Length: 459
Image (cartoon, rainbow, N blue to C red; front, side, top):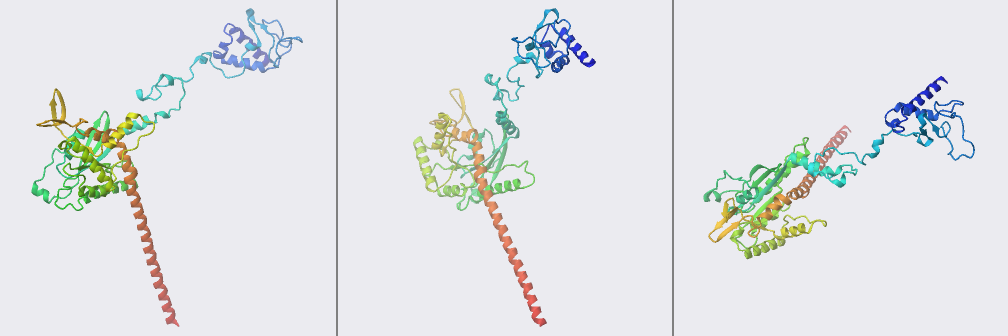
């Protein structure tokens, strides 16, 4: 009873201290008093006990017929006059529940987000998304982008074709660099006995924070000999060697830092001085079209008129289809892409083979400097779409289809090589097992014959 009286007195004192601020202070300022109020709510009433400043005892009941709602046992049901006339009814007493600040009711639906590490690339950084709740996985492309940029990219380009078609000049024009500073041109006598060689030029290019490891594979000597039979053999062997090296690396123990030297694209230069494809062109492309992405290029297009260029392109496309040569096919446009993208895609497909012009010389005309060639009858601009397909070729190699060229190499050409290697290994294992089994059976047969011979001699 003494503990109950002490608890009641603490409750009365708490009401008197907070009568000016009831009930918000009970919720956020004095948690001990609030808990005391909840505890008193469950205690049974004490007969005859009155709260100082009240006019009725706690055990009194309302007469029958009263309009007040039914009472909860242990809870005062009448409207009481507390000190200084402060009226508190049953509904004004706090109910059991979580103690929350009144100011939290005015907070927004979603908490304020921290500063985004993606800056203007943040997909949630818009006014309409501030009051919405998201999980956050829409930033996955940004994460992949940041990791890829940090790691850098690699691309291997092979150029093939006979000498004098402007392969080196075009490569320098495509990547705005000079990869052939120390090259020495062979004399006529040396070119007669020259065989096909494979030379690599590796250069690191950085543009707007993106690093590219560019590897140019040149094939000097191709098509220059008197007898060009199987002149493609060295090129095919090189491509297979890169596939084999990559297969060994990814099958080894350390697969973390595998260097990709696989050939992703081959620019094959076709001479403009002919009628379509020559036999060496057909043989080369048919031997390589299952190992690498072939992009045919009509070299030195400035030596032909526009009508001759269109006629030559048509003839080359007919030969490619007649000899079942599979060149690189541009991926089809998605149904939800814009019309401009679809038109550009169709224009690229119609431009094959690309009629190109290369030049590393800056020409000035009418106060404007550009790369081009100057002839007695006028100027030829390398990057003028009306003069050549140089811009289209550069776009597919660098800006639009570089990743697709790498994916086709990985998912088609390399997978075919890998499947063939696994099949050959499986067949070799089966043959080895058969040979081992045959040897075992032969030895068992010899042992059996010796045992039979010993038994005959014993009898």
